[in-house]
Length: 169
Image (tube, rainbow, N blue to C red; front, side):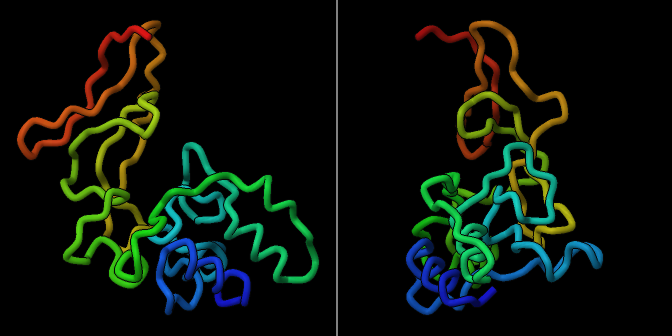
């Protein structure tokens, strides 16, 4: 999407002075391809075509709505989006296929980890909207609901794994 506002926001957000905007989804059927944000560029944004556990309505969506001239959204109400933020042009042009390993992608299919706040167990996999990139996806039953326990990421050598451990604050 190359509206003036989205283009300016993408350049600032990604720290990419020559960004043309944010791509539209190229996967999925007629109701998804060409009508949603590209999942590999905006991750857990609500307006991707993917099923997201905790979707965010980011400044990208609100800016697009404003650029149509039909809406005047309150930008202070945008959810914070961290996916790819400040990662530079390679993040949006080469994505997970760049020589650089971006934290938003995972690289070992089937490996386990935890979501950002430690409340959900995740596994590494791609989907039909991923352009071959792999993401941390939530296990269907991965919510850690046990009192006094939380999911922590443990790094042992090069193996990424998530563990549910007791903790005290």
